[in-house]
Amino acid sequence: MLKILKKPIALVVFCGFIATSLNAGYDEGVKALGKRQWDKAYKELEPFIKKDDPIAILSAIFINMAHGKKIEAENLFKKYLSTIKSQSDKNNAKAQYVLGLLYSSDIDVITRDENESIRLMRLSAKNDYKGAIVIVSNMDADDAKEKGDFEEAFHLYKKAALLGDSSAQGVLGRRYYFGGFSSQSSFDRSGV
Image (cartoon, rainbow, N blue to C red; front, side, top):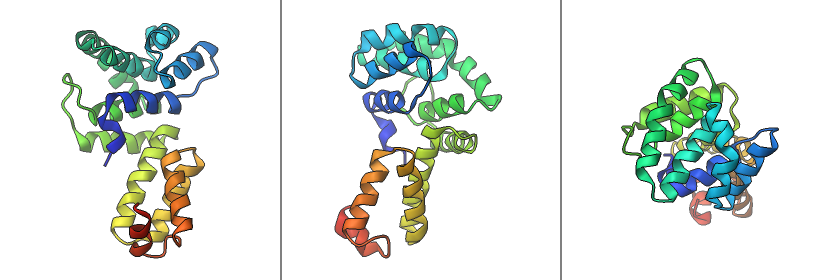
């Protein structure tokens, strides 16, 4: 279900583009993530890691993994896991989102749990976190499509697309080009 979350580099870039902040240092770190400038990203995000920002912590874990520093990544994860869980328990949507991503990844220090990942993503989306809303909308749209509820699939893809998800925008574009959301055959023709 959460196909994008299976590759650490894709996850870092995904997190980078979803994360938003008014702080220039944070924004510079996020931009550096998108450009795979790992050292710059870490330097810019380090103050936010120290402030227990869940996205910055997640980014630091995957930056270390991208550098082949698995032990450092595991140590960061162990150090901050209880902090992120505590924030999540207090309805911090960003922390719920990060935990949802972590439970769907293949990090050795946490047991992969697709059900917990989905539960946390839904909770984060319910708490209005944009990244989670996009993921949940796409998951639900895929489920609706499989059940033959093409109208519901359209509305959910549209919701994700309006939040800036390029994958959902692509699905909508192909759907319009190949005849809309009226039947499974229109999905089959477009390869979606």
